[in-house]
Image 1 (cartoon, rainbow, N blue to C red):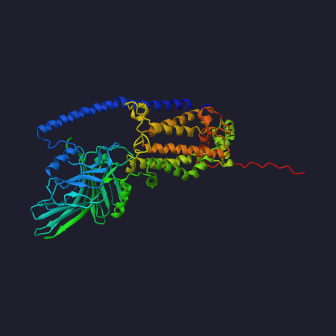
Image 2 (spheres, rainbow, N blue to C red):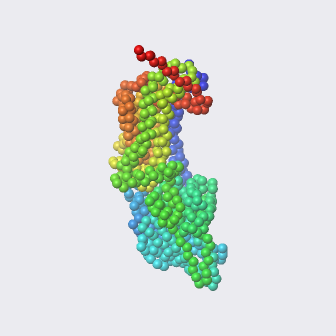
Image 3 (tube, rainbow, N blue to C red):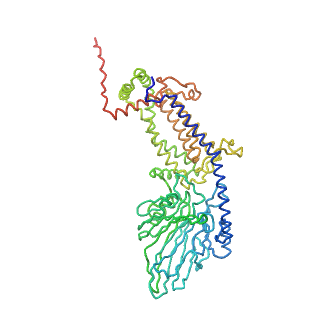
Length: 635
């Protein structure tokens, strides 16, 4: 008899099917209807913006047009206002107008796996997404002429900034003050800027040094995904501050004073940060300024202002600022955290909530990579080590699973006996579990442990630059990107890609096979609806994970495979009959719950778990000890 407060299994099944069909229809509608409409709207808006821009150009209201970085650099090189940068890892130039570091590329990193175009960290004004570093001074004396963005500096020393050759810029304000900037570059991505003021006046001058990183608009390589922080970031006042571009619009100014810290703008792979001399009081800011027009884009800025410095008459004053601009390699961030005494510089890498797991996982995988030279193999070795570490827990779980199968006949008997009295059946199940020392919830422990492990590894593979464009074998040339193959185009034979949310590649299919093998290791649950839901889970997981990093899919594939082998061996050694081939071929489909065929995921285990929960929430159930049988006297 169906209980009034319980949904009929057929209704629940129909509800689930309706939900899945609704989701598929929603994705299809978005891909085939909404996306083309949005694309048409964007095209129309772009035409309107271009028309308005042409009108403003004709009216003389717009001074510059967005141009490719290469054209701007080439034109300014011809004008002689560029000072070149060249080292083993970076290339670029300074702009003598404003003494800005606004052109910086990376020699060892490329925009795509084709390695045709180098990645660029900083862009000059006039490009679509300008980003630059600037240093200067401010003064309470409004009549004092100070260098600004339009100041024409001259090159006083050096001609090309290299590892062993610094450069010096100089500017005289015509009021007795000479400003100098000496810039040096170490072996990787650290610039050190010494700002100096020589006072040739008859009185003391008070100045405040500042340094800033400015960025117009959101960068073109912005991912916009929850898996990694992109935007203003800093550690000061003993706290990490991470503000997304959206949140900066709601909180446009963050100001803190601290003696230790750093601040900057970060992307998934690149980091630009200001690191002042630690121990002195500095004011750290994150600033958002909305663009005045559509052509004047929003401004995101991170800056540091130091305490006032006094340049005596006939004397000088100077300050130092370190600038990191390059790849977010964890070993480099750790190196400068120790060398410069800057706190938690490694937090520029978004290791997420499970930092205590994510960071060690990264070091283990990186350690294996140092031996095998392939991050894919390193992930497999890491998976083996992980299975060894969780072996005691998995062993307990599988033993509990085997014990559940052994008491299957007794559970079936209780279910039939008390099928009209669920509460009494739960009490009897508790007695049975206590008598046989079986914990029906033990099988859930490996799943609970896998959750933080999965998300931690997800962070490592998605966010660390070491995995960027790291190849495995065959068609996997980037472990941090999804599998590029798809069954829509027969894995590359046809040019059509199909809907992206169903672009399931070869490695996700391998993962699907291992999940089905793991599920087929035992007969399906006794309840028909639960059996259908568990049968659908591998397919749902495959659709979801196919859009994730290929390295994560490879990990999950081998983790399922090792777990299946481990479970098979343990259950076989305990004398539990496991007909894996029969289950795969469907010979054991819908077997009754017998000693060799009770699955802990069925109704009985669920009801047993509910019984344990009720026995905790309510007063304990008194369990009467079985009376000992009288032994016959020996004659």
